[in-house]
Amino acid sequence: MRIGPARCIGISGNIGTGKSTLVEFLTKHFRVQPLYEPNDENPYLADFYQDMPRWAFHSQVFFLVRKFHLHRQSEATPGCVVVDRTIYEDADIFAANLARMGVLSPREYGTYRQMFQTFVDLLRPPDLMIYLRCGLSSIRQRVALRGRPEEQAIPDAYLKRLNRMYDQWYSNWHLSPSLVLRTDRIDYVSDLVDQADVLDAIERIVGRLPHQDDAE
Image (tube, rainbow, N blue to C red):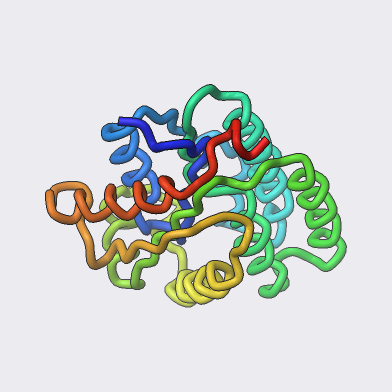
């Protein structure tokens, strides 16, 4: 199966909401190329969780540059690509949250935003943005299950704040069609009915997208 005329689908959501799982699910059911968030490649991530003020700028810039390359790669890849967390979330949620917390200084955040704006001006937004919404208890269970050491000590208050910021960000998203999935209420891993519902919802939105030849 192909996902209609879509070139790029972005999967957005807080830590532990099931983004990578959804990417794997879509990869199995459609002819798509998955592009995953480079968490394991970030040389600053473990240091960041130990000392946020010292390493926040380094970590965020690493993610920003790598996400820019992922988006450029998605534009150059034939067919449809699914991106596990987009560059927009890095800036509008994670970096913005660190600035609110005082972890990123105003000077660092200002420099970061300039870099972000320079990058996104060169990018084409995703054809569809899928937002995964999930409650804190389910996030905690999934974070514990996957066992990444640097994530185990993340405070609940931090995750709750990210959830609120994600909801606000999604309500203001206007660059492409969008879809929200409550991943603490559906199971697209093993429930056939939920799988069919998710695929149908995506196909209905993508089916309304203009074909590339028509849009150009």
